Image (tube, rainbow, N blue to C red; front, side):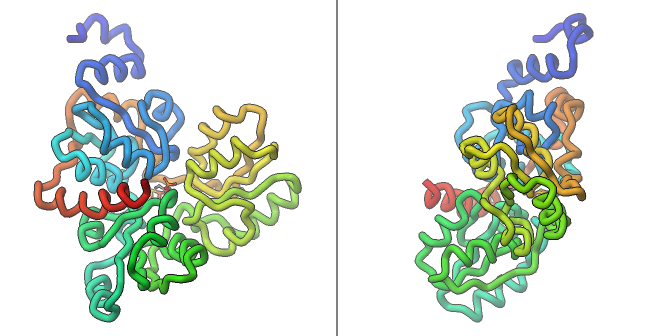
Length: 310
Ligand code: 13P
Ligand code: SF4
């Protein structure tokens, strides 16, 4: 039990740490949330890493510092746990950019089709899908599927990137996209390359094709961090959300990272603050609820992903 007189002397961070212990809670944070939140998290990573952490943690409460599809996935994977979202309004716009009607139509049209759902999607879309993927495991999973036809939802850019790596598959595309990654322009990368000729371009596959064509490496946020860390290069132009700069600099204090002039900032990820983390830990507000049947159906494509990615 934390005493009132002790609380009065504590900083927000200290209070979060004390409450985390008292409530047997863990904090999961995506690389795109603000550095202060990444610092107090028990697990920081990309969507794939965080989904594994949510499935495996022994803690009773998960505070998910990310957007709503991440909290929903955590709840589906660990239905007996309490999943709290620091800000319920933090929602990925791309997660909604596919629809049931189109999925049904594609299933009718193609006999041998797998509906492959990027984890950045609503629980409703996941339930209509055969398997989930993240940007870290998508190529491996699509290649492992027995089906020749792949209807990839919602992200068209990631779909085109995987299709290039898996030419044996026939892709059906959906018109979803990430507004944060699509805001970057190829012209900005050319300008940055002109200014920093020794810098390598590292891009997330949610970027448009014109940017991926200029990249030396394409991968998930963890992939980008790993590539920069292991590379002998000293300068990098980073084409993904600017929150990764914190981990990039932590791991590589002697290297330089440039971003595009139109700084890629995901407004939803930035809704998560330390004060809101503290608030939900104190009050239990913003809990993710999911009916048992819905959780089971949402878990099915997520568990298939974890199985196939192993
Ligand atoms: P990853 O975490 O798979 O790199 O995806 C980035 C993203 O957009 C998360 O919202
Ligand atoms: Fe969604 Fe893009 Fe934000 Fe990721 S960066 S949560 S894909 S809007």
